[in-house]
View 1 (cartoon, rainbow, N blue to C red):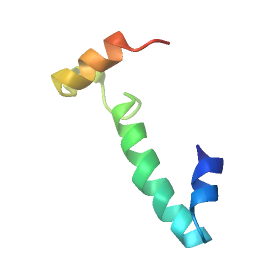
View 2 (view 1 turned 180 degrees about the horizontal axis):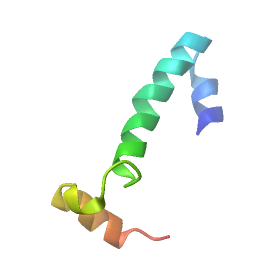
View 3 (view 1 turned 45 degrees about the vertical axis):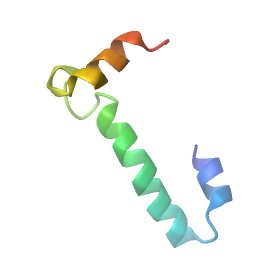
Length: 52
């Protein structure tokens, strides 16, 4: 994902902003920062039905 974002970005500051906008929500919704039980129902359902 980082290589893709670096390809899309025209400069290092733009890459940093893209990284924050993309990776922060992904990390928050992954269950690493908050327990899955405290997430909305549709996110809990998505975690249970995803293919590992």
